[in-house]
Image 1: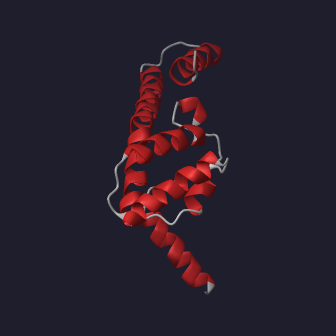
Image 2: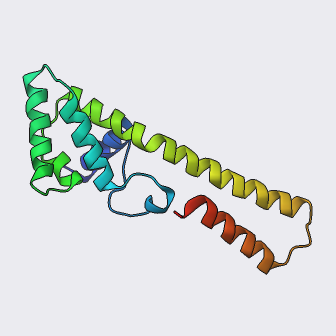
Length: 146
């Protein structure tokens, strides 16, 4: 396979599916589920789903066994030959798990940006230290677990 073919294949994969950046830890302070939570949720969800297709049953069993034997989520997914049915269920479940947390982060960021714009447009006589304290408190309130 040439470099161009590899890059084309990567672009096709990325544009066809949601992409998770695995292992970065960037999602943790925003309450977006991490890999352990996603693995547990997928294990419960897929295990409770009564697949009729024998290949789907086999893929789910293989995936759960990989997780039960200590394999991480990424490796368990890569080592499982999932049917389209199981793959679609995985994508939908992950999307449902991250959608609300992702939307909350977006809304909170917008709130901070709106406050910044309000302070700037109304030329409020706040010192840089005062603004820093406000944004620090907002950040702690919105993003940090209590």
